[in-house]
Image (tube, rainbow, N blue to C red; front, side, top):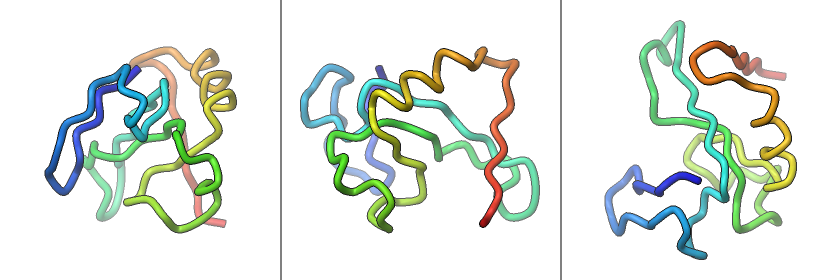
Length: 88
């Protein structure tokens, strides 16, 4: 249940605030190669705007339906699981 820290500055939104755009789950991503190496500001998360899923409306994160990200979250172990994102 993440607090939202706007990447371009602005109002920090508490975890339980209904205006928090991240939903209730956050899976942090860390770049491991190329220009992404060491980057940590991206993640896979839910959204309070499900109609935005599949559209180019975010700042680089992967958005999923809240119930879907909650299920994925149950399969991962912090510090032990690896998520690989590949271009189509």
